[in-house]
Length: 107
Image 1 (cartoon, helix red, strand yellow):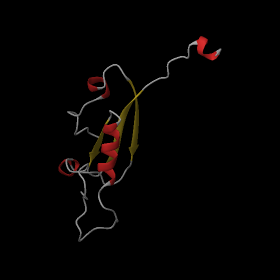
Image 2 (cartoon, helix red, strand yellow; image 1 turned 90 degrees about the horizontal axis):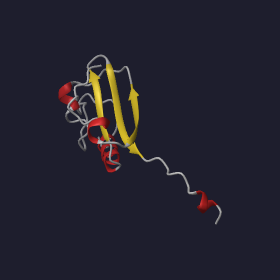
Image 3 (tube, one colour; image 1 turned 120 degrees about the vertical axis):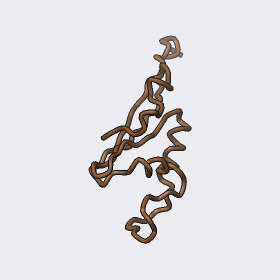
């Protein structure tokens, strides 16, 4: 699938020296046009028209997901081509625990 959003920040370019985790979900569905991808993460956006709508929902799921990921200092985006499915990816920084000082364990 082509990355229509290659201009979006990547972990290496904006998250600096932090470690990060990347999670993605991919399907082989109908895909999403580049025009529709632009509005996908906006609140109350649904790509189906009300006349042909087959699925219920308010159009808030991806907007909320985006907000949560960004609050954690991460990024979320979609890679998709019509007729070839979609891949939703998000990365968030992770902090590794510092090793405990041996003197703390003796207290």
